[in-house]
Structures are given as structure tokens and as C-alpha cells.
Image (cartoon, rainbow, N blue to C red; front, side, top):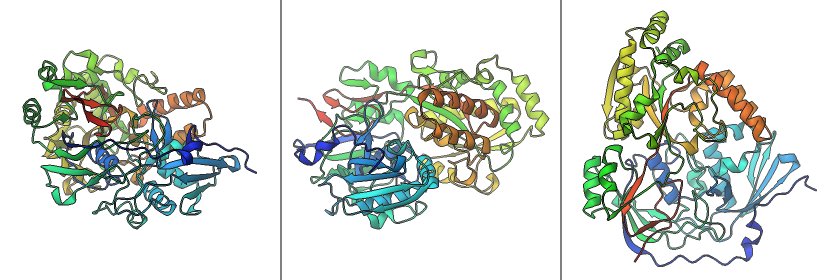
Length: 527
């Protein structure tokens, strides 16, 4: 007999629930995403454009509700046995891939294995894993050597990296071998023949998609409805062009309005500004820990006395403090794990002289820095220019490697020295939902070559992460999170630059139902 059995609320009645019918689809929704989808494989990059593309094409076992709690999606439910060391999952009956084949337990097993090689939660799960295997077509088990209490949070995470369920023949590929063909399990089909790099991506409604029959549409949980027959992602060259196209009615939705054009669009009665991404975005400057000068923690710490988060945020939004916050550590302000531990390093008086002296003491004054600079991403570009100015004033000699977004992503993945095509620092933007805890925070992992781009190594941070995963209640997690933030300011895997809010803009008459991610699902045109 099992020691504990758990089935998510509402899941028990799924077998008896009727299939949820999708309303008749409207014709076309034209959307401008925040960036081009430069690769098709959502495990190849943490780019949010690629992530959102993934949520259109594939489904996950669990999704996140409005409180960011995991709820069933492809999974019907689960059972936990053997004091948390055995999880048995059952898939819903009915979902199919875009080639018409049913979604099977073997597909889920292969997808989990592939995802574990890339994701921070997945890597932790892999270290505790005894076996993952299909029991039959609809059931699979995960057996553990050590309990993994955040299992559902891991399998249901919405971002960086979601555990998308793919056909076994594709999921059996190593995570390092990107997909070149898409056979999805989600509400939209990718039309590869209509893809024009740098211009357009096209998706069509998958009419055999079976939405989850439980829950309300939220971040990635609840029924996912494709209410347009055709979805076009228009890749436009700059923000001004996008704003003009939106005002002229040539596109319906701009995913992320740039700060400088927000006041203009806010005055338009035919447009709606909507804060779909509710938790905000954190900006960070990530150094490359593999090569000088930022392989030395003393050099990284030398930047702190001069770093003003307000300078970075004001470069985006000026004095509009309702749109940004400074005094940000490694967890988002207002989240359960945010604290003031170590923040004096950022909130005390700023002192360029002290920073210059600290850098000179390391022997790295006048060190050359290759800064990755995606000029076609206005927010990244503006923050990169502020970082350039700060680092130059301290005593470095920054040199911009200016490129488009796709080229930047390719170079960011290179581990070679800067002189051989690598890099020293890059501005990074992550939605706060990715950074809520040490289990999933990509930039807090400090496991060397397996870490997120920049590849920091800190046994102390890794040990504290394990301590956090072992905590059984929120109070214990908060205590450990304070210790993590204290160690963070010693090791500095990155420099936090602040937190800001971004709005979507769309034509009045559209009804955007989901919150959390700007996904064109459950979007309808009101009459």
C-alpha cells in the first residue's frame, strides 16, 4: 500500500468529462512578437519568442494557473507513493500530435529525458532519478533515489525551459541536437513552408486538438483555445515601424511596447494598453565566468560600488517610477523569497572612485571587454549602452559586438575566448516568473559548464540551492533564500539592474483572456 496518494483537485472526474468544444475560428490574427524565432527548438534557447512559439506548437503535462500553481494539462493526474520516491502519471485520453498519432506515455518519457539535460529543475531531477519508464500507453512512472518535492512545479513550469511533450522519435534526440522539424501536441500547427526568416512565421489551428476540460485559462493552465484559423507573427524591423503598423490596422497586437512609444499609443482610443505580463521583467548584466577579467570574483565585485540600478531603469522609463523599481536582489521584489539581505551593496551611496580603486587592485584596469549588443532589441540596446558607460567610467575598455538578435543568441552560446568569437558580458532580460525561486532561477545555477550562458561555478551557491530544495516549509525556504542572496553578493554570478513593467498593445475589439504570458491563445475578436 502507498504511504501517500495525491491526485490534483478536479482530475478524478476527467474520464467522465466530455471533450471541450472549440468555438468556430475567426480568420487571421496578426501579431508582432518581441523578437524573431531564430530557432524552432524550444530547448535550444531561453529566448521568450522561441518559448512562446513552443507554447503554440506543443503542450505540457501540467500548466500554471493564475497563482502560478501547477494544474493538469496533458496529464489527467498523478499518484505519489513510497514517501515521495515514486510518481505515477496518467495522461488524458484523446490528445494527439499534429500527425494524428496519440500522445503516449513513451512520448512523455522521452520528452522528460530530453528536457532534463537542459533545464535547471530537470538537471536536479536527473541527479535524483532512479528511472523513468512507460507502464502502458497512458501511464508512466518516475522513480527517485531521493524525494523531489517540486516535481509538479518542474514539469509544469511555463518558461526557461518548459517540458514540452514531443513525439518519441524527436524527443529521443539529445537536447544539444536542435529540432529541425515540428510535430507538435499543442493548439496550433507550425506552417514551415510559410516561414520567412526575419519576416514572418505562420501557424494554423489544429482542429483535432483536445483542450484540457478543467480549470480556467490562466498562465498556461486551463483550456487552450485556438480561436483564429490562422496566426501570423510579423517580424518588423524596428519599434517605430511596429507602432505605425498597429495604428494603421496592419497588425492586431504588439506583444511588448517599447518605453519610448508607450505614451503615444496610450493616447489612441482605438488601441488598448494591457499589462498581460503581470510579474514584471528583471534586467541583469551577465558576465562570462570562463575568461578574464570576469573569471575573478574580485573583478566582478569591483563593479558594485558604482552600479546604480536607477540609472539603468531611467534609461528605459525616465522618472516614471510606476513602471520600474530599484533595490532589487536576486529574487523579484514582492515575491515570497525577496529580502534585503546584502542589498546595501546596491542601495548605499554610489562611488565611482571606490570602484576604480577596487578594479585597480585586481590588476585588471583597462581590460578590454566584448559586450554583446543586439541593436534590433531596443530595451537590450539601451541597457547595453548604460552598461558600456558604467564599465568605461570604472576603468574597463568595453567594445560592442553589435549584431541582430539572432546573431547575438548564436554568439552568446560560444564558450571560446572573446578574441576567438566569444564574449565578456551581455544584458539579459527574464520575466520574473522564471526567477521566483532557486530551483528554477537560470542565472543562479553555478554548476560550471552546465550552467546558463556565462557558466559560473560556485560550490557554495550550489550547496545552498540543495539546502533550499530540502526545506519543507516557506519559513525554512525564506531563511535559506536569505543565505543564498548573501552568497550571491559574494560570488556575483550576474549584476541585477532592476525590475520593470511592460505592456502589450492591441486593437480595441480583441479580448485577451490569459494573464502571465502574452500568448495568442483564448484570444477572440469581440463584435
